[in-house]
Length: 270
Length: 225
Image (cartoon, rainbow over all chains, first blue to last red; front, side, top):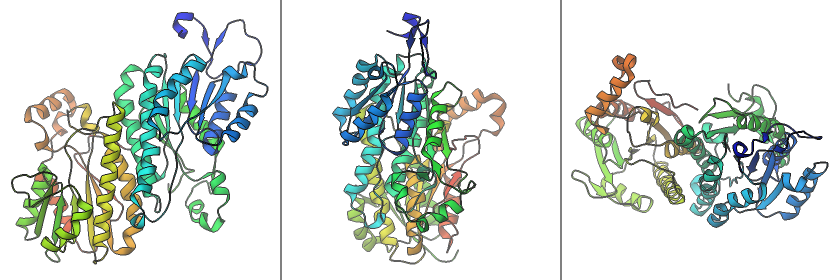
């Protein structure tokens, strides 16, 4: 059933709290890597903005369950509004089946936020090939394959959108992160290609490139390890995950942006 | 020119690679050309560059400059298999760049150049290029260059707009016609002109460039992030 067939009001950015005279058919978004850091903030923001949200996690089922419970508190029809899916993006079969699972649960898939990724830092000249290939496979391969698998479902909807979470490393480069930067650069290119390829069919595709964002990983670092980054950032502070989530929500809303990569970096070296 | 350089051109079987080879040879440099499959005028053939490099270096080098040439063939990402190919190509290229940098890091003042295809001209010309490879390698080069600068290796890229020889003259003419008001500004660059530019860079000692991506073209396309 589509919104056109049912003539039902779509409320992608309405919390839908309280009774409505018109049945509400919410837009559905799938967020990969939704239990931690930036992904968790994106999921939280989208649920609060009224989207139906499916999010993926790879292995930490207890963390995902707890997060799911928290999200569902105080939401009407919460099981229909938010769902978690265990998926390893490195597994082609899991990736291929995921969009259908989401459609089965929510009845539709309007948007995809490709957030999941991993890093494996170290000096590239001494790094084993298997390590950088794993990063490429998860970050670029997994993301691109999932996006292709989701396209049929997305293109059935009236205003489909894809947002890719790349990284400033993929644009500006970062020593110690060669494979990560390569994979994120590939995603910037994939965003451009996808936007060009499917733009005429109404698919909007954009990316964000977060800079230095306060996440669990950053919290364990000593300030000496990142002071130089903050010093080269116009805002003189780290970004917050909620600020990244706001940019994702902006890119999901209808507009004229296409194939763009938005830097969320506090003015790093600008 | 400070001295004659020994240059290896990987994937030289492209109009720009061949033009660069000719240009360097005419300027007196020692040039070794490589291709993945046998081609007339190509010196060495092979796919396992990381493992063959030292052997080639012994036979034809020692190289001070390594250039990774443009690669023909469009990337498409229509199927999971396409994604696998792009991923495989990226992993292979990373391994080749790594091996090259490692080899040159034993010498003073090495240069590695990676030639990338600018793709936004696709809106006007059926040029076989997509942004996945080029954008990925921009991220790689900017990162790795920071790591290897201290070893005396300068790793950079040229982001090259389509060359005249890559397409039939009729296609260029159509593009100029279709662009109407811009037609007078719309002239393809020749491979030899880009080759002369790169030769000048290759000849420089202590070049003040590392981790840079130099746009090369007429300025019409705009594929910035």
